[in-house]
Length: 231
Image 1 (cartoon, one colour):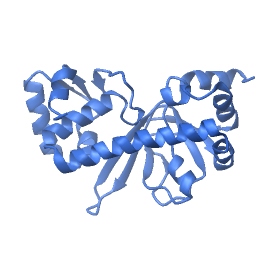
Image 2 (cartoon, rainbow, N blue to C red):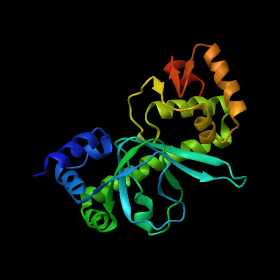
Image 3 (cartoon, one colour):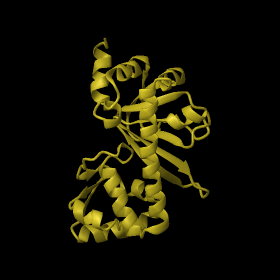
Image 4 (tube, helix red, strand yellow):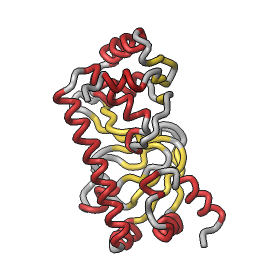
């Protein structure tokens, strides 16, 4: 039986449909065997090349997954929001972390040790759930690769805004109109200059598709924004 603290964590994390889809026994075991870690803004959870020791879940706040380009500029690969579990790849193949994970603001992270993860992987229901998690992320990755190689800059901007409106890595079916992202961060995600992004966003704003704010972008028409993605 979970204690009050574990019960609160279970309730907070069960807003994520992947975690909520696990049997309650697995969810309770994950929370009971995990440790809560607090990060300050800008503090790194792990660096690219670090050995893997934990399976993580963001309880509060936001992390960015990023790498440095050859010119030293940062490329943001994904935004990890509250409720999302991540870090399973390096636990499965026992290879180093593929990117940096940094707290955007104050963050609370639940970390499940490798030994507990391995024990859970011996349970078919959990192993299947991890397979489904990886499948969803591979689909997302293929979509981003397709965007980068086949779509126009405007279509890429529109598609990424729609992904962010659904929590990016969370892949929620429900969209929130206000996307909490700065133009600088969005440009880093897309691998384009701030000037190029600003031009595209001004066009979308002039057409009434989005509204620009300080540290956020409001989606005024999901249908019209989706129409720009090219399918």
